[in-house]
Image 1 (cartoon, rainbow, N blue to C red):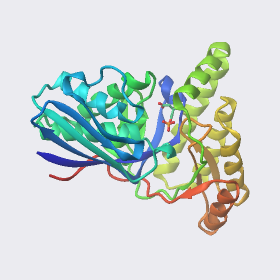
Image 2 (image 1 turned 180 degrees about the vertical axis):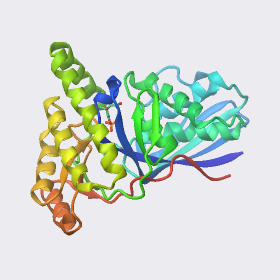
Image 3 (image 1 turned 90 degrees about the horizontal axis):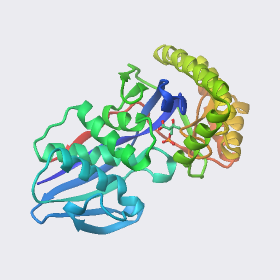
Length: 323
Ligand code: PMV
């Protein structure tokens, strides 16, 4: 029995960092997808091929899933299988092959998307038929088991798709009904280290608790206003909110020179606004611009050393591709 499941990547729109501490964020699902082909086998083995993250022909006894040294590229899928098995035991083995339509360097959430794909596939293959919420919970637990700290917004996006207003740990997962979002996306060429940056901000919060709490409160207010502007397709206001949000992220110390160059270049070229997306220090920046400036904004991002990535926002969540 074999199944192919796919889940979208994500881009954080507003509210990163604050979302780790119970504040809301807004995130959108992007058209570049992660695909997993999953098969139940007779031999009690866990087998994985994930060429995008340099895992080829990785094999171990299924009962050893999650035990011992796990190669970096295999962690999320292996722990996902372990967590599924712990909760919904079944006999035999599992063969997984993942293939991504985007580089794991972009920060589009490839780890969370592959985690969601594998749990969804196992849920279908074993007849467990998990609800979206149960799928979210098990995938989020998997990410927490590995990363220690994460708000789970990327897991929610992989499961539900669309554009979500999200409060950790899935306390609110509210789909925002929008039909378009003409985002301009620039990749910095630098990999963001989410865990290090979250820890860095948490150290800052130990030393300056009130200042950082205030920053999170301001970010929360911006997220609330962004939600309204998004539903009204008010790109100008959303651009302004991007600029405010970016300023607050700069105070948290996560902006980074390369992203900041790209963000300023986009603004100078006529964008309504621009900000980083995700943990900061690398990955991608996002921008909104009047239609007549889009070409100039893209050229400016490229000139600042970024790579413009064409994306479709607000796409469908996890889905079965065939059986
Ligand atoms: O680096 P990313 O794209 O996974 O985004 C991190 C966003 C944070 O709010 C900093 C962390 C989180 O888990 O929400």
